[in-house]
Length: 152
Image (tube, rainbow, N blue to C red; front, side, top):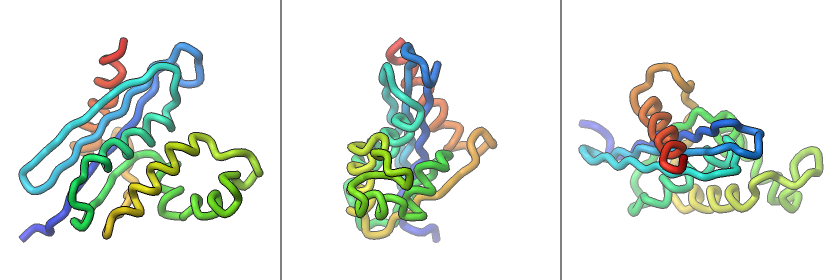
């Protein structure tokens, strides 16, 4: 019998990243038993990291029962490493400054994401290799690109 758990794949994308006329998108797919929910959205003048953070935030906001075991898969090493290696604990302690004493970029998104993660009883953030044929990760990427297309 399969474990009772929620599985989420998230992804962010940015077209013309680092330029002033860029467009970003995020996507996520949430699965629980035989239920599936897909979300996507987009933004102008953004970054890939903002879209990655937004994808995870928007997906986690949809989870109603935070007691169910939840696995979140992301191809963003930046997010996965921050959460699993607890970089954010040092950031908090250092008044949201990174190891170079610079302000942490996207602080508001990080605060929101960490608060969401800490509201779950049992959550794992798992790194997955992007564009490697994992069906749900490919679907999250497709949704992130749909987010970009939605505001073109």
